[in-house]
Length: 221
Image (cartoon, rainbow, N blue to C red; front, side, top):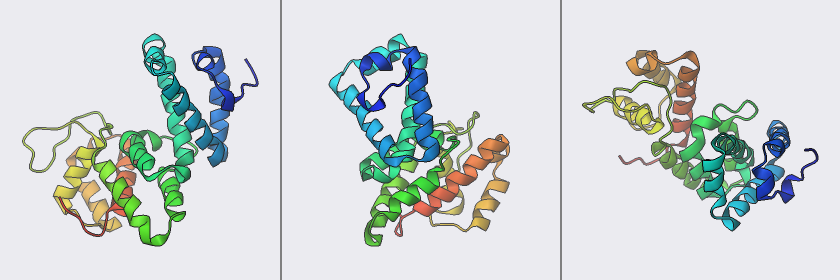
């Protein structure tokens, strides 16, 4: 199936395995070229299809779980490219639900996309979005790593959720912003991080750098 018009997608096309290959190809092209407007428009089209067909999402999930999962990954890629055009609330929701997935994107860097979003705002209100992102990270329940982790002042090991990594980070070296040297010392001395794979260690470093960059001036635990 060729020459699918992504901007006139139908539920029937989305449910088609053959159509998915063409849709995926075009979405990957958007991501590679950072086509912000096209990605944003397609995100809204997927949202409209879901809104106008309330049962469609659940039918696709139940009837074609693999295809459903693949579409979720495509939408994450589209939203990552489209971040400069998303609302504050949409950006915060993306960070809370998809930050770990976004770190795996081969064509776009989550930190760079957020910085682009911040740059389109007047300087005096950039901290408003940073604070929303900061709070979203602290609520993120995506896993980073496989093994449970020891969190300072917690009696039992906890799941390796992003919010739990950040909780241990804050409790161990404080909630204020930290220098690269301080982050490096935390990472090198943390027993939980020592057990991670090389790629997950890199993600922890990226997570902590981004987290510190988003910390508001006044912090309350």
